Image (tube, rainbow over all chains, first blue to last red):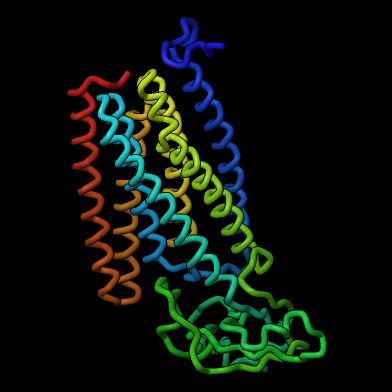
Length: 291
Length: 69
């Protein structure tokens, strides 16, 4: 059976069917991501002083990933233009570049950025015990500088078993630079480059801790938002890459030989989706990494 | 909207992001006094210029080829 209006336009809409379909789909995606962004903004605005983390993401890595996605949008549109000009070889190379960009983006996210967070630990100290850990929190210094109170000790957890074993009564943490030297004026501001934990070990009694976890979604509203939005975005990137791989494989060449305009229209629709996914990242990057 | 139109919108947003990142780097440099952020600002503004030049080039090329509906 021949599917109508894959190449020619419908008389009533003036568009071929897939283009109407993709824009309706993207409209629903706007609502999905719009809701998540709104939730993030309201959670952040409503966060008590000292409870919203800053400078936990690696800005240079995020910037590199942003550049990769922008590059992939350029290559996908050039792939489509090449098809329009009936240059299949050029299309093939541009599409390959697009796929590689998507794969690199996902690899950086899944192999570097997320695991680095999963390997990091934070313990919120009970308000009545904050003084006991003043050497790690530096709240007197923070108060003198008019900074919000520091409630959390973070770093690399040496005895990870302590998270689940009730017989282990304390956490041993290789402190982050802020907690290792909290009175240092250089620590008064967030740092946007990755700073590895120091060699200074702190022992934190579990009884003094209000809440402790690795940097997982349950750690805070910040990480819940971060993993939800970047995870959903990553799934969209993965979906786009899979579609592009299909369009890059020999099976699509057969369609090209039969009806090149049909393949060009498919690539245009996939390219519209890809641009939308990249546009989402254009908003994710400043919200999570910079502000 | 065709892919061409959406691509131009995307490039405009990317350019704004590059300009914003440059401004952010300058702000951080003023606060932190770290020259590396100044380098970031220069790179960001350079990226914004490249994106603008590319956007104009792309628009002209697509118009010349007349391949866009």
